[in-house]
Amino acid sequence: MSDPAITLYRLQACPFCERVVRVLQDNDIPYRSRFVEPMHADRNVVKRISGKRTVPAIVDENTGVTMSESANIVDYLEATYVEGDGVSA
Image (cartoon, rainbow, N blue to C red; front, side, top):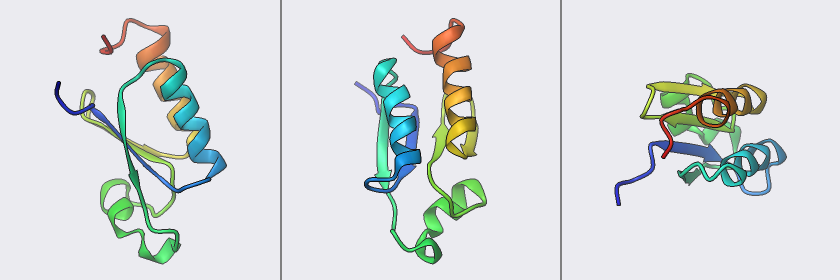
């Protein structure tokens, strides 16, 4: 099986990150987690992919979308993978 198209950048015990995880899991959307540095200033990997150091952030290789902010991510996931006939199998 190939790697999931969605990579979620997150922090341990972050309520905003957990909100995104819940949507991914509840809808059986495959994803991989990358846990990032707790110190905001050390989150260079997130800064490189999204332009910000905030989490959660996702990269969706299926659509080329990179975004942050949990509410935006949840809306995107629901529109792309849940409501329509998205690219999820």
